[in-house]
Length: 134
Length: 274
Image 1 (cartoon, each protein chain N blue to C red):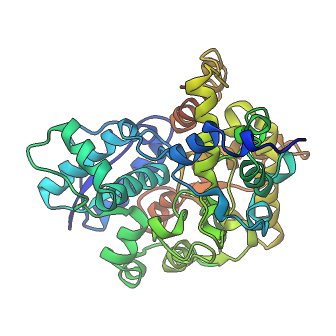
Image 2: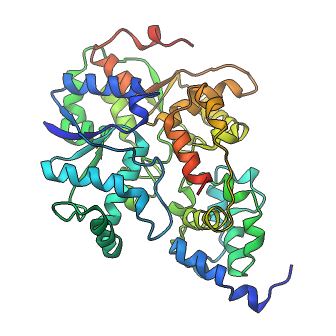
Image 3: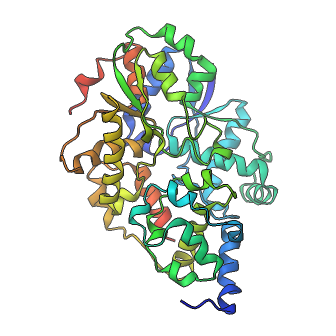
């Protein structure tokens, strides 16, 4: 993995900061977010590593990881961060770049009958479509 | 006592049990919950991107309508509470977003976050009072060991929600004590249930639910109560996906127990099939 000046100053890093309103440089890698995360065992890049990747400008790796889709916005990490970095907001910014700029969609409408038949609450479907589509 | 009431989409459909029991109990406690006339879905998740305005305009409409009546806005669903309260916080603290939202909505009067959003549990604690509630209990749930499950949306992010101590809350336990039940203390009570991941990644949620249920069971719980339709679904349905393959712990909405303690229905167990 190569850290280049172009990566560090790329417009996409600035865009993530702008969308999330967060300063990734604030993170000092204590790892509290990862320790707090209830789904860290199924993530390919751990929460504190997401911040480190961003500090190093390695955005493409993040846009291809499953972590941003596994994060359920439970806000446990944000509540415990000693530096006040709102990681769920950063995860959202990464998702939004894929969903809104690159035409990506994580869910198809065809899933609705299958899950609705099981009595899944509307809240789940609305949440999933808000998080996984444009 | 009169309040504006925001039901939300799920309480009118799959979580009708939560709404019905809450409204029945409110009537018995002398609380008037006036359903807002033109409420719209809150969107279920709060938009996390800065400067994103459109997704929470529906919340602002409800907040502004409540302000016109001068009443506090009550929600029963944890997700609606989360979204409305955070939207209100943004309207109060972010002048730029507030101006844009007002310009878009063109309300008769500018809305700047003046409404107070409260959850039904706060209504019981702060308006009715748990000691008063305890006196109104007709069938105390004596000897019942109940585990309260808070989940995420009521508590976090703590700075905005200010619902209770986010790491060590007590409102649901205090509620259970008021009903005469014994509240079970267990470490997973503020964990995430897996929320909407169950739409596509059921296996991940099943694992999270198993941890919560096993933790409650190992601390002696005979049932678990929650305040969120999605926590309820995940805890109830995904228990069946655990290695044991069946549900081991009954799951109730907190209002079902309230209804039972106020003697407004037959015993909860008789109606729920487990």
